[in-house]
Length: 214
Image (tube, rainbow, N blue to C red; front, top):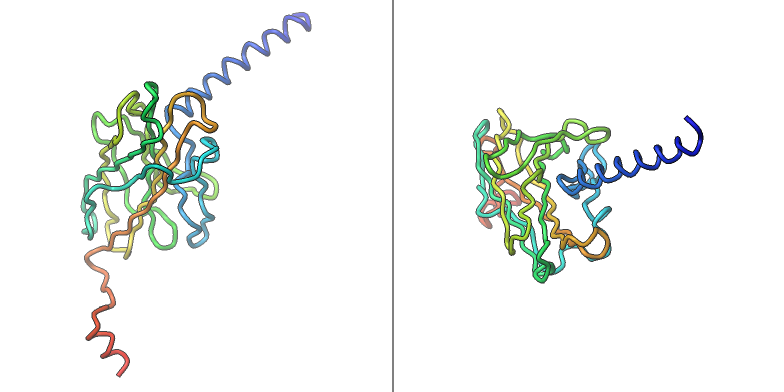
């Protein structure tokens, strides 16, 4: 094969691979982008604004868990609803939506496990490198294309088999207008803590506080 033909073939293959990577990122986000802070030996996670840049976080919208439980029973399974709302892409007929969610204990390790709910278009991944072992559930095919705000997804979370104290869900949502990543997408971060039913908690009523300091 001469040099010119080889060069043309290299460019063609590179373009194909580049398109494949672009579509892969549109379908589901890179791992470990929930914005979780540094916990234990785990460094802080980045968030989706590394790719979807140009706008301030949490502008004109929000991501949240709808009516989440206050407590969890060790080993119990809970259906969570994550809702993403944004006014920033209201004028775009090509808007799409995405999210990523993880559950961590106080030391930053995995707390429980996730399962896909049928019809939600989600997928489960596991962190690597500095975040090895962390579970994530995120958008796969369920990007809610052209759907008006707000949008939501359901996921199943099974709590740890034995009480580990407080578990915090960290999650990120992306509202994209479909016109490219930079300047046209909006990123939202949030978290929610839940306590188990077996770990004693310190009373915080005024009467109990006075007793401790007598």
